[in-house]
Length: 251
Image 1 (cartoon, rainbow, N blue to C red):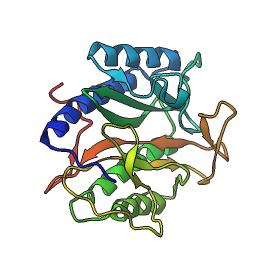
Image 2: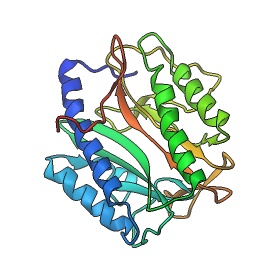
Image 3: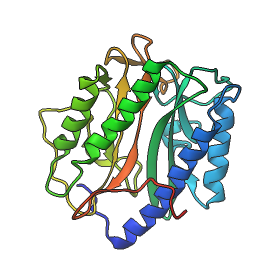
């Protein structure tokens, strides 16, 4: 069953999502040559806790950190460690915060210093594919309408859409119904109704769509070693324009 939030629950989610978005922004500001991914993770953890919230990812199914920090060919679930960021890297940061019984979830890919034109284009197309998809996050539409817009935009720009991982509902649970693929599937998915909250999160590859999970059971990389980018926001379905909840205004 797909949870539909009432006004009180939506109000709580707005706060959780603002904390989440601020943590993403903090991480993005820290992406520069010489910084380690573990330093970024610690800053994200400390900020979320300072806001009276809990990092959603920490110990989630055994995940050992507060943020997923994925560099270059790592698609998602990169575990922060002593890796020092280098000029030219692209760095995806995925964060979640749990406050008042509800989660927020968002991600973005950031440039580390000066990056190649093609890497910047990948970041830009990935971000815009989210905004192409969110245009269809409206009451009465189906999930597949979002999926089709994301896929069409990314592929029309020469990139591929990851199939092994998808977006999802978010609320009292970090992952809940409905599934939100970034590509068209035979199932059209449910109709969207006011009060649904979903995480739309394109994961877009420079080369092949294929990915593989490393021995740690988390780190997921492109099969061909080419770059990948990630962009995500938590979105509220309303009776009009969709509301992106993971914004920092009013924190």
